[in-house]
Length: 287
Image (tube, rainbow, N blue to C red; front, side):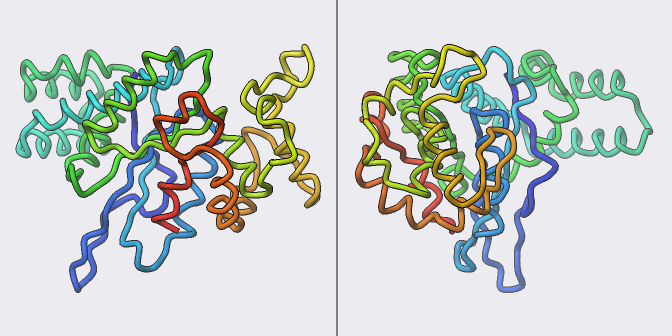
């Protein structure tokens, strides 16, 4: 599994004003292919003026056969390995990428030269991450300015019991603690986090929320939290679809989450078993 820098995000690069205040970068790594993506892409439009932050979205090049633990492990490993490469090597690789973009060399020549520059380290970036070498090189360049202890890696994950085993959950918590990653978890899923923008959901059965079963036996049927979310949106004449919804509608109501989330669990360790979310703990410092 690998990651790439999204080419659609606003505020992609660190900006330094004349009064030289360096902005902290928040690199978001998402589990979902679209739902979380839509929400995070809208965030730069809501940044506080004093937030001094840039938001960068890291997309997974290979999204199949991945779960919450593999995603967390992959970004941790990538950061560790990228720090093994010297500044000089990174600059040479970036120059190669520019030549490739200008059609002065082809992909085979690019990969071959990268292997020569990196030597033994090449196996990490040309073999382990060979789904899209070009995107990996661009990501490597973006992360060369990543400053551990200042910039933040933010993971947004679901507590899906079927794909996120108990021992994996514990490992994810440890990896995030060891690397100072910000972890936004939702139990059962991101739809529950979105729901708390609109209602405290206390009229719903918390056990039904936790089980989050489909509303019917059909595989296309909405799950319970998605059904609740859609019902709330219908009150405003809208509807919810995983791959197409108005993120502005939710972010305009973000203050509700800060209140409604207090009715549920917010601690990541306890979210292993209890309904709740901690995503708002990342977002509240930005908007």
